[in-house]
Image (cartoon, rainbow, N blue to C red; front, side, top):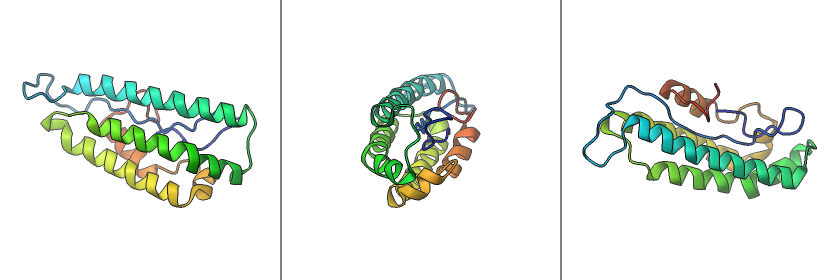
Length: 150
């Protein structure tokens, strides 16, 4: 996961985009579940969409200036957290294969837990290099591509 809270000089990385990549599941699914490659493609589309939305909102709010952490905390509460809640809901609506289901769900559960911590203490999140360390690790384990820390 990229640093979702840092903006300004390091460019706007307020995008904890959360995508999915190879996890060794079957590529043919007859039960309506997404194959691993379909899951990857659809999750990455969702991630890119929300990365763009958060980046646009941050650019509109701050331009290329680094806001004080207090202003950034308000932005996180008002803009970032709701967008990530929507992102998680869209990611949960995807139906992974049986092979991918447990790891995918665990990754999203971890993201949701860490997002709740960000919502409860946005100033700490604003000061953090990565307020989603466990979700980042799980995403890396799952094989995150576009939206991960790679």
